[in-house]
Length: 99
Image 1 (cartoon, helix red, strand yellow):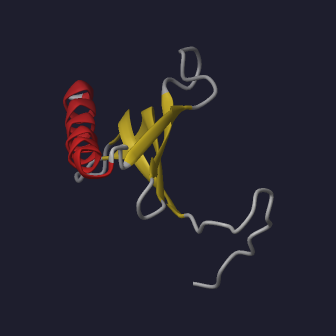
Image 2 (spheres, rainbow, N blue to C red):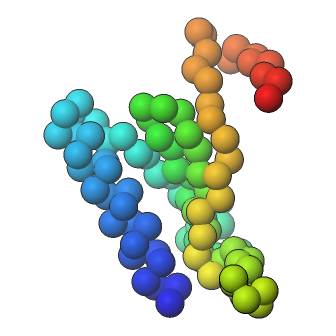
């Protein structure tokens, strides 16, 4: 089951990245491995950035998931982190916006 969800997620991201790459020359989604992603405690994790709209997710292969029937288990999952706002210069401090 975990492998199925992981493959589905990769297919969705790959399709979007390939479609955007054909138009702009660069992929829309960029993924970077996070510390500890090579294995060990905590499992694999990746930082995923939507380079067009600024949305950010963390993908982890070992997230606590609650099933519709209320049971809890560990498996692969995406966690939405929010939307980034570009700055005007490197090192700029960007204040948190009110929701």
